[in-house]
Length: 135
Image (tube, rainbow, N blue to C red):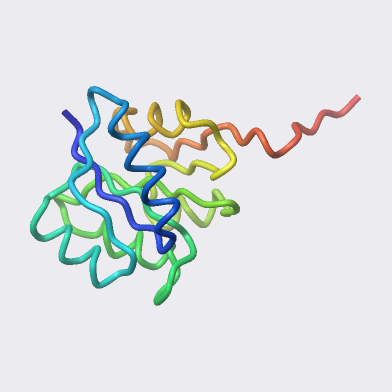
């Protein structure tokens, strides 16, 4: 069972993510936070394996927060979940994965459940972005 914590300032998004996690037998929601203070309390008490982190929320930006969350040696994996994020900046911040908020629920669930890779940051396909092709 993968223990998951969520940080998103939107109550509607948190409720949706709660439903997504509840539908996945291998994922367990251990808590939800609306801001950094609540997340820090959640991290200390719930000890999640993965944190799904909204990039934009009140307080510090998600990239700086991701850097702090991933700093300890026993840190949870971080999945940045946002409408827009620079994959290079996410990698520098220590995120293990990036998922667009326009992705479907199975993409998010599969990304959360994806084994940790220290080699690279997994960038989930963004259905809202057209693929560029040189002809």
